[in-house]
Image (cartoon, rainbow, N blue to C red; front, side, top):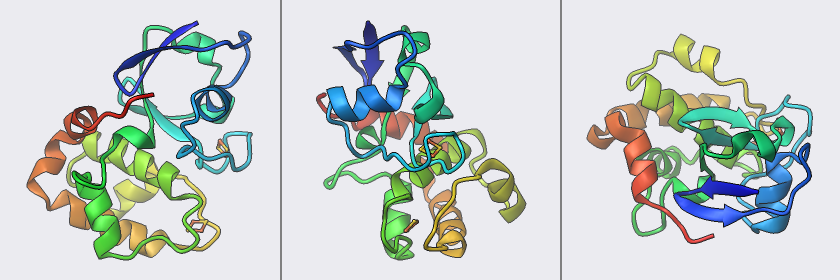
Length: 165
Ligand code: FES
Ligand code: FES
């Protein structure tokens, strides 16, 4: 099937019910998106589909033909980090780091829709699980990023920093 991932047309050899996460990790080697629970409970596998945060472990790739799929690999780069990534470093958010790509993608979708979220907005929008308990630093970093001028166009920033797949 033909998919569009991080702005690039790619071909995936997938059965109709194969989750997008399998395609990303096993076929395209985009391993920034993580497997946590496999049942849409933890958010480690969060990607964007047409700008919305989606849990790729339970989303068949076959229903995403023609959609704009974005993974953590497109959020920023070492040279041009996304405002959220800069804020993550400033707030020293990660502990083990395993959940963080999913949390960053959820946060990017949130800020694209709501550039200045309150704590309540953050809690309502983000149900990702972090076993290391980084939730307070996640909130602080989202608020920090919300103060950065370019965050009002988070999706555009995401689109500007693409990787080859
Ligand atoms: S791995 Fe998808 S929600 Fe946990
Ligand atoms: S930083 Fe370890 S699970 Fe979130």
